[in-house]
Image (cartoon, rainbow, N blue to C red; front, side, top):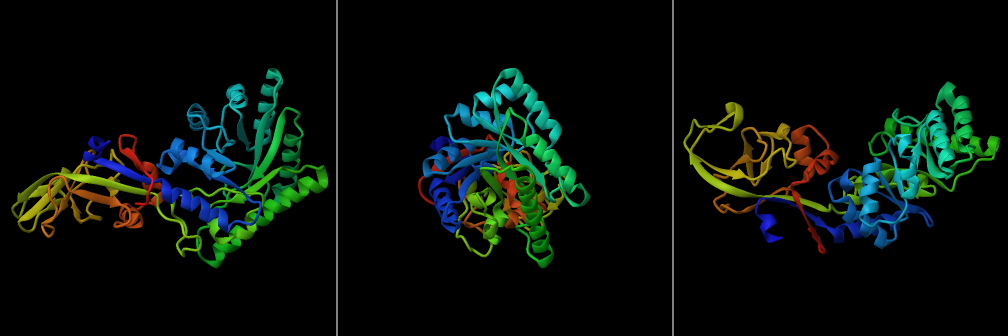
Length: 374
């Protein structure tokens, strides 16, 4: 393992992850179930490792984006319920059923296609109904003039005899954003969601074992919206709680090493495009991390890793000015983000969000799982 640490790696704290799980659990109303979102390789933290930890801790459900992600967990020995949030072609219905996977249904046409596929197999498929209350992506349309048609379409889908409609859910667009306008938008989404649930119950006698809508922002800011189950993703990995209401801690530390140190005179161009030129005798460290590892090229010249990063970030490496840091030697560890280098600063430099940086740490970056903090 030590040999793998000589270039670039990501340290993942299983202790912080477990502590985050327990902190979030303690914040929830009694009886609320916990769905851990492990899509995108658990936001770069390693889906299989995170899933096994959540299973051990007593989480109730997992969520992934697609069938491939779900099968990776099943092949890795994860047995707890898994919800696929995205689209799955109906030709894979048998695989869904054989692997005890729950499929999201986002419109009547898809529901009918899955029902016919189940009919041919002589089996039932467990599904959750997705309601579009304002995210404007997947889900049954039900806002404004579309409410009545939406209710009828959902009811017809729930009555299909080969679908086991275990749950119903929606997704908030701005529950993590401050401001009264965003609060009102979230409350409007929640009201519409509950109106849908009530209409299905009152008019059609349809109820669900699991109703869920709380993503990270809602878990932190709107505990009254927890319903039967919550879906923290970003929060589970230590982010999305800026006022420290819940007390989560980041679980990943992204680290690289200095491979080479050189001294250049003033007037030396550095890296592709010659966009940076030294203005003094400069001690340059070559850092063994580039955009193929997950360090965004868009952050070139705008971020600091011990010393200022200079020149264009390359595929496999980048350069930092360590003239003022004589303590940095060849082989020195340099934190890209973690306790000493806030991921939000790197995200701002790259013009993106921390979510993207976590998910962008590539497969060639070794994950080192630690039982202590980071």
